[in-house]
Length: 74
Image (cartoon, rainbow, N blue to C red; front, side):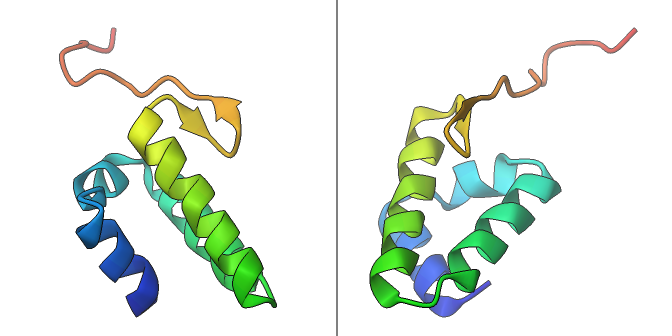
């Protein structure tokens, strides 16, 4: 994870929410942010990720329903 992403997650107290996301989402977010060529785009994407982590039910501007820890798979 790039240092600027790690620092921002920790400063905004969103690291736990990031860590609770499935591996594919964490991987997608980091790749998407880091592939941006311009710094403005990197920070725009970073801010979108932060907003989605805060909301808790959004992933890449799509509705996302996290699996509840209390649910028992059948």
